Length: 428
Image (cartoon, helix red, strand yellow):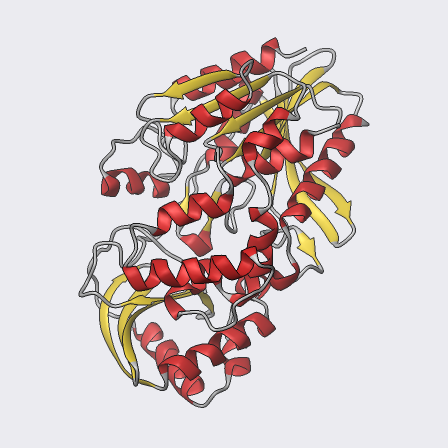
């Protein structure tokens, strides 16, 4: 089940959503998760495989009982929100549909009136166009489980070898451009980075993560491990190493991609590393801190699950409100992710390092960048005032900050671009 966050805008309930909801209720109450799955979009089927969905749904049915009533709350295309009354509790149910009336998102959370963050507004149209001086070509890199699909952006009017930057995306089902329809996220952040690099004579490779977009993999959600992302990073490095057009490879990792980038760069032919909004602590500590703002029953449920994972055991009986972050299908991935400490990883790098962090980032605090800098004293630390997690100018106010997550034409923070380009040009 997929998490949506943002502001809500009141509209009437669309007729097609009512039909889809009634179908969902009937099949859920009839214990037919397979039939519900048949109405998923291809993208959602890839993100949430049948076995994972069946396990989650049957657990929900056992814990919460039948779905007895739903009351329409709000609609913000493409997401409709309902007060869902189960026999053993009341939850807020968000559903999203595509133009074929297939499910592209389902999310369940405790119902607490009508909170401001019930649903995300429709992602704004992705209209950002690359500068005409840049040529984009598709790239396909094989791995043991399938292939990674990406875009190589090359400045047209250059002579001789040029540097190339591999852009590694953050957490969640985020694509090569920094967008995620499943999360209601539309930023174009990575595409904008590629554009600015290209205008300054620097090539870039950005790509869809494994199980996202056009990247094809036989790996299922419950089989995915953090090391798979590292393997993909190494494969892309090796792919570019053999390309005579490039003088040097620099890795830029954003958010979770910072740690992926660190581990991918160790003992590889990489000349520089850029950490953007990267964590300075292990993921279990970061998530535990974030969970402190949640209701007690949620934070305590997460702690119990976390304690089990630290003992090498998964927890099948999970509170439905934790499915978006700790459902059984992703717990082994979490276990693999929790093993790594970014401060230890960054110490292993013997190359120039740039650490960039915004002051209005709601997800990663400045203290994380400071921890990375302390672990690697010769790294360059750039703190960008009023830059948020999607690398755009934003105030500290949560609602106004989150609004930029759906402004795909809003430019990146200029100070961020200046720091990255200056660093890349100095790397030798």
